[in-house]
Image (cartoon, rainbow, N blue to C red):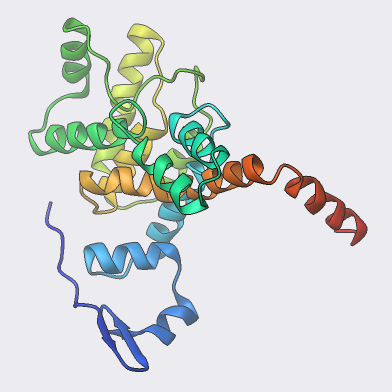
Length: 238
């Protein structure tokens, strides 16, 4: 997979240019997906690519209070550290056993597609060696509710070889072990089909989870914040 180069960011007095385009033009029309595609891949995304990338970020937004990244951020926040410290703690908790699966899944899918490996052969090899397949199974969900909506969107992509591999592997695993795909697997497959490399996976995961972790930090440090917010909405009939 080839990552295209982008034009260097230009910063001069009263002027900022990103990938050859003035910042005021970016601000007028760009979304987060535009920024990721332009700065990392050096190309403007298609409308369906924007829709899928934004959907991935939304799907990753939060998963309750138990993930290690959320717990780490809350713990640091409870010590009285600033929000930047708590967010940094959350980021550092994205290790091999939490969020790291998306990177491993992307590496697996990429190598398999490049070598024309068959989905069933891959699954059988992992099972024979008693190894967990990254991107499949979940500690809480028997069927991760985030997978099907992303799959449905991904089927609109003209090139979706990694998503098709994910689906075939899921079909085999479900038949043999009753195991389904998870958010890491489907997101990793889609990010590859969108043109990103595996190194981007964990960064996208953190970017998606950032609003959720921020909300938990606010809960931890301002216990009355959300109560006051709801009362304000009620008083304004919102």
